[in-house]
Length: 404
Image (cartoon, rainbow, N blue to C red; front, side, top):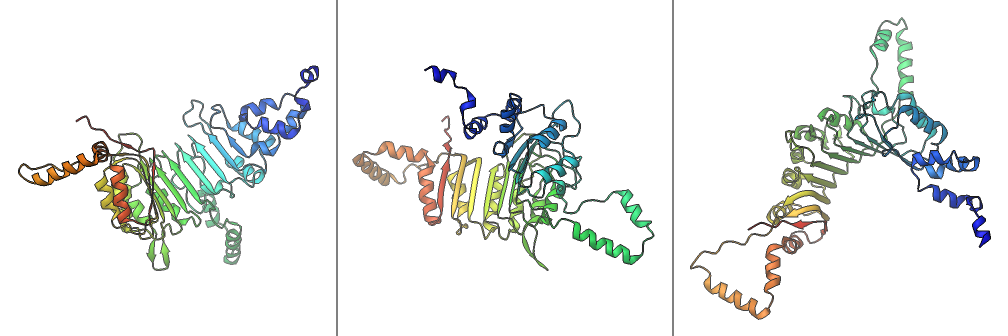
């Protein structure tokens, strides 16, 4: 027993200590590195800096970001989550071009970036982000107009210098070729998530058509996106081939947030069709308009409806033309109870008596009453006939109970 009492953390192998340190937050890790030289070396192990979440650290400034990048972040970083100063009284610049360039150089394997309440108006374009990014998620951020443009804008001073330069036409042509060779081939982001970004407009959506690798787009509470903006970006046959967001396979549109904004019903833009779109997710107030246009999506295979109230008749009518659907998912959906048709006096009396006798003989009156209230079993049977090869998924769904 005395030997166990004398044991301390120095007797543990480094792999076990790293596993223990992995449960600490970033702020606690930095403090743990001040204990001793061994802990300082362990804290800088890149296995502890693969997934860095700074959203819970409200006091993060640009100075702290530089300290973390110079001392801790490295080639092991895969996912980075940051909380900006948009709602802070301090304000100031949070993400600078120099810090993003240093991040791209020191963390070449960074694939996912999540920004919360960040003012991005100080950045001219999304091309300043690390070129290794595959997933970009923005929540409650402010965007400049040309943030998603493919080419970096030139300043007026550069334009004047080019206009008044005395270099010959041949030298200008060589310079333009060099610029084209040195410019990036394209934005490599494959997944873009926008959650509660009021500054995102149809102009930003149109700029995304220049992204060659974008295959997944999620628009949640983007109140300024209209049906015309979505229709203009839809993948369609053009003169030179498929135009618009031609590589997009997954699209999510949902409005569930604050009130006071005019409902644009952007999902009506799907009525023009969308080539290659295989997965569609509709949420909140966009479910009704989106179901009306879902039949125009010829390549649709998966449909997800979430955070809405639906009736059995509404779903059956919308799914009659979705013969190619392979999966239909309901998430946080409130189903309206089935309404029994009113019985007219003097009609169907014999049928009612016969049905009553059969129900009494079977002894399943309680089950029949439950089915008349619960639309899910009836919905399963109806969709099984309409879509025999479709898989139904119900997650956290409920049935609305009327006071009557």
